Picture 1 (cartoon, rainbow, N blue to C red):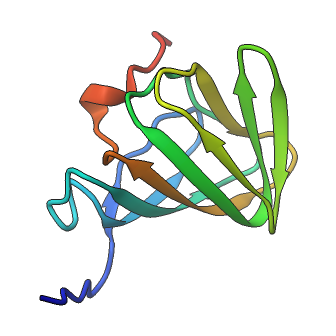
Picture 2 (tube, rainbow, N blue to C red):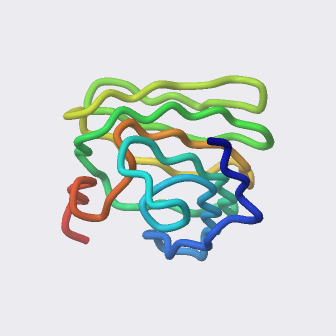
Length: 120
């Protein structure tokens, strides 16, 4: 059976500046534990604590530049590019260069209990 989503739920974000998370599918908006799909809007200068999530995250940058740090590399992912981070890998997201708008797909769905953020 098809399910129409009339709009996203706004989810509180971690980090030093306000970031907007609009969840279309996931634990909050649609009750899905298997996948979450959200649009993110992060202002320039935003940075969140590092994390070691229990989910894979597929990210497609629509506007701006998203910085993704791992223990071994730093990636500046620009509009039109994408990045995959794997479950169990330490990562940190930020937008030091420009505002960014991007779509994040998490498998299984994002959960505060499975993101494992570093202590601030």
